[in-house]
Length: 105
Image 1: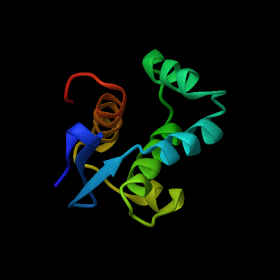
Image 2: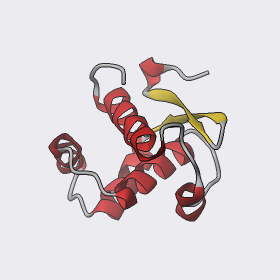
Image 3: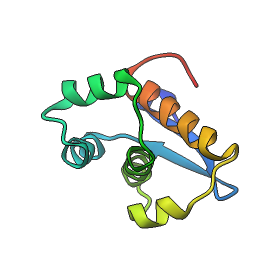
Image 4: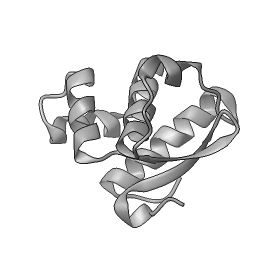
């Protein structure tokens, strides 16, 4: 079960519940993958609200890995979410809100 106080969320992927968490290591992974110079630049990028499908794959993958799931981004790219693309956007928004503070998605 996800603990939002620790920045965790639960998301349905491929019809199964998964816990996701952007740990410090997962955030460092995203800084490198998304070309953000530091944590504040990464937060500003998320605040801008411009999200590519590749960004969503990387964020969801980092969140899964941060929660201890051994999965690569290619496997994440093949996953399905309830609601299709909008479902993936909702997962990313909820994960970012849980990580950086904000309302539940």
